Length: 89
Image (cartoon, rainbow, N blue to C red; front, side):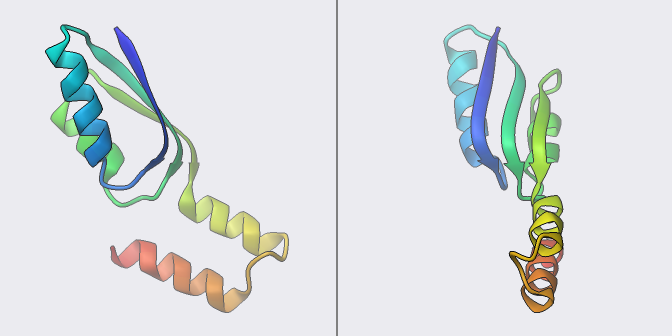
């Protein structure tokens, strides 16, 4: 068994490649751990394509946006634009 680690998941193309390579080597990718989920379908994509593989995330991007807004690192306008972008993509 192997654990796939990555910093970011968007649509999961690189995770698919890593899991396929592990499978070609006779290994099972039981878990994928990522730091940030961009909330654009990657988590569901991996879990649908590879039954038995679980994706674990540290942060959702919208939660980070909320934190940045709360601590004054992001204006209301930028926060709204970022959240709208994620929701529409």
